[in-house]
Length: 498
Ligand SMILES: [Zn+2]
Image (cartoon, rainbow, N blue to C red; front, side, top):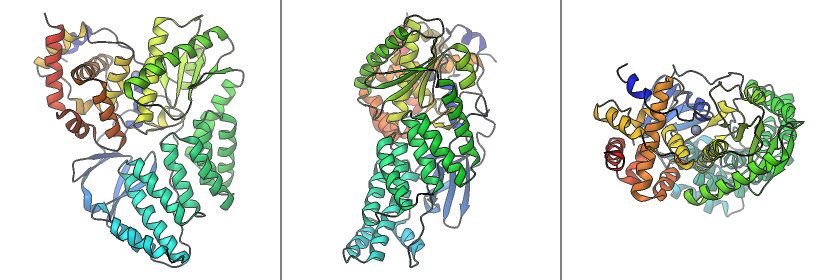
């Protein structure tokens, strides 16, 4: 490794949650669409005129006509997350069942074909529904449901939600549709709305394990561990489910650990802390978090919809619960988890660490990432270099003395292409990871100084709507990855060069 000597001069950068967050990117197959978009999947198979694939969100399918090819097992050698016992929740949207009459497949095929939604056909179904005929109403619901499924498969949660909610207006008692609306709300971190729809589903099918599983997820997101545990136990009594069993065990570990914890809350946070920590420290942490919340909220022009959970641990409990490696200082996995042993007040380091993890939380929520329970189930859509670059930028890091080394590596043609910094950094050596953090920060720093944080906000919005990162860069910055790296190098030269 020629570059090792150069890396050593890069100061040690904080290794917070990042490496844990990334575990969700351990991917087996990649589906490449004709428009160039790449979809990461745990597995993908061709079946008839569809490509079916598994994601952490369950099984989804795409029309084969829009798929260019499938790359098998590209990242199969990515090491797994630290602690395989961590929960890995797979919420599978339930299968829809027909209510009399056939033709479900035909309606779905007619509503979505050739890689797009046939709105004209759906409008025809809607006009037929005006007759009040129950089959016609169900067909209209099915048309919108097909559209929603298609949008969901492309990561477009906004339109998927809108279509599924319209489907429910045509078939208000169809549990599968109610559950799908709830599922999309969960993906958007809008837990109360999800519960409203699950309550409605429960009235129709009180003993459905999927309803209980989703309700547990909603309660977990709202930091209501007791109710989450009760729902998941109910779901497991109705149907064995290995993954849910893992999630339940993780929730029970959390619950047991946090039973003796004290609680406090502020406008945007629900805090739990180990009894050995001082209440004054807890108040100080909340004060600090609220201050960072306002700052990040106005930088990213985004307000997370629900309270953010925060847990303060002793060092030992942090290792036990998170099973994080010894270098991990704090982590975000749907809640911000921080070890604070021996601190009487928030010092500079803890404050920066809180802001770093809070940035991960904002990015996860803004990009509509499902991030529930422990690390393994945290599927963050934003690529790692944006996550870590932005989190470091928010905590106040700047390239400074790293610039010279980064420039040297870039000039020698050894810079790691940003495309290779999208996925997991888990398999990197410490030196390479240090370089990756510094290079990610430099690129974000360039983007922000060139045209303000508005560009980052627009890039994240596009990623949240399912666009590939480089395509989002092309739309917002009119640059591809190579252009961006070159501009970043020029920026470093001008700003930090002698
Ligand atoms: Zn991080």
